[in-house]
Length: 386
Image (cartoon, rainbow, N blue to C red; front, side):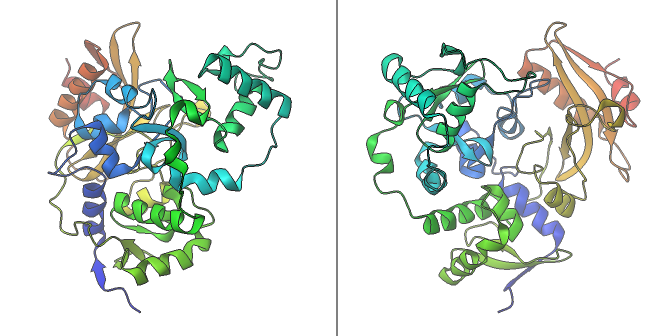
């Protein structure tokens, strides 16, 4: 059966941005952002701002980061961490959708002695961070990124659902026994793996607005993509997904019956986190926006092109530039270490970008902005701050 909907890439781009929260009908609160994205990816890099705070700012502007923190702690929180798309914050009531992932991996391949020690410590002392455990095996193995045996055991138990997140303190995950954080009824009737994955694929299509099979599989990391073909066929047959043909896309795409297929164009300017769903998948970002994005924090400095933490700049529905930002708190300065406009950009929107940088600095609590001369649009942008 041929797809019943045909769209141009320009239309697909507008749909994707609208669905993810960039439109006239923008979300205005933290929880409203989750209604669009369903998750925020967590990452430890803090040179500018931690990854899970940034997508909220990109959509709702200046907000208090404590608003997000307060939704992730305590008993029966609105939001909770789990491995959804990498380490992520998700809505707590959607945690049962990942029960199959916990169950598929629920075997005691961690150190049982350490596992028992961890369980007893949590039962006695309540939720704890890794550093709260006093044990000889709580020493790092090798360089700074080497996990201790305790940390490795905690993470394995967390992935398998034997432990859950109780929030974070100073970015350290708090580990807890499920009953210390979650109501018992949450996992009383978890969906089957089959039904859970179908629901996750539907949520992925809703968040992306429109996506290929690989796009949808990647959103909640349901691998291998080829294995979800029967699930997609079922969802189309049930009317929960619609097939779409997008000009210039090599693969069929999917959307939901409730997706707005005629959104108003995106207007505005904002930087994006490298881990924002708009740009976290290099293939999708290139296909939709013609923007080849690779985060360079893992690239040796001599081989970097755009900068250590260069962030995509979204302006009026297009990814037009990259800004390498650093929040230098010691000097109370927002540093723009490089400014690179994409090839083909006829007029770099200096005023819009300058105003946005002022909004960023205010959000970060930094009274000064410093624009370095590196990049093909740096001098033009820097002149706006002289």
